[in-house]
Image (tube, rainbow, N blue to C red; front, side, top):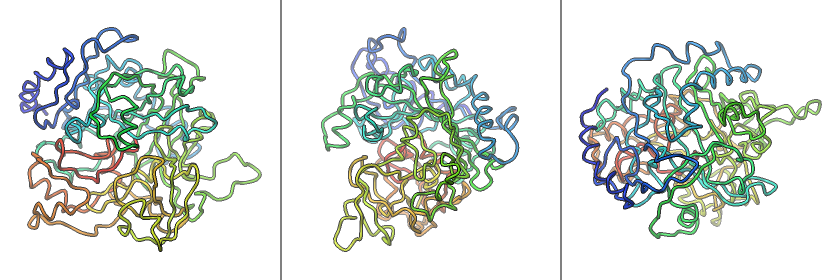
Length: 529
């Protein structure tokens, strides 16, 4: 799918590269759906060792194939259902399948080229949410997205010395990219109704943290990436202290500690259609030829284990004859996973990786509060609202409960909450339903990828689409969008979607932006990953 529009836009943006390379950051002048980054590049001398020479700035890979690949995961995958007994084999085969094209993504990020390696990006992901907000959008070095802050309290025994932040990159394989080709055939008029992944599609997400080995010893020896972002101190001031001071930018080292491969495999997981696998860095694993070989299985999950929803702990009592055995049936947890990952598992110790923020602090639990009644998390403490303040940490989420919340016109928060607004930073008041109750259980059902969590409650029809009516929708912003009005009408009048929609648009940065400030197909919410 060649696009002459992109070539013209790229040429018009060349001045940005020239000016930025001599040390003067200049933001992009107009929205560009194929922008590779947030429009500001580091100066040429901002790349100290261990890397030689400047980065080859990560370019957006968007030349999507129109036809399925001749060979895919479907040719080599294990057949039949995945279980706790065969999940280790499934993960081993999956990692071996992607190794040739993704090893250098981990170990040699300055040289790795997604297009040449057969991996693809999403358009409209380059610009920040607003001019100068360089905590969002793709960074220029590796095309990373920022996630949430990871509090030192998330890791017990003082192993994490100070608050850090995760950064992730997300790519789609050629099978998944055939769907992207249908959606973005006309980039100004996306066909969101085509959001259904072909069988065998792979989505990969790799993530690193700004913590150094001195900050968090578990990352010692991990692969090193670099990103061009505001320093962590400024991020903390903005997110936790309300600072509005302009961001500065610096080249920051990351240590890669998590690598996820998410698979559309209805044969293996008929209830949900998806298998999540997570590999984590283990500094004590055999070194092999590089850090890729030290990414070991944390586990695989293919559902929410909804049969245990009524247990406040998220699982039935452990068998006293085998107290170490997991009671979950849709999560294989590698018994040899590094011990630090135990601290970051989700509710009922469902799968969640060390950068996934399944564990939260500042929790307020409520019951029998209908969605929409409370506008802010602090409202949970209001008179007449029966609530419980939870001291310390609280396991609040998991892979499927989080990613299954994507909708389009009936928002659902990524955590089990009656509040539909933007997620507060970890440690601030955070209102959740009480585990074991019927409200909480809505986040822990098994649904196919096409089925939303919330049924369609309201529908805006194209004939009624006015700026005033659209402004009332919590998931829509319309500031200066170049996207065709018909595409916006389609998005807001189409019934909501579930996990497939999440994998398409929310997975990377939490808000699928179609302009620098405007039209988005999802609620603006803090990304977990």
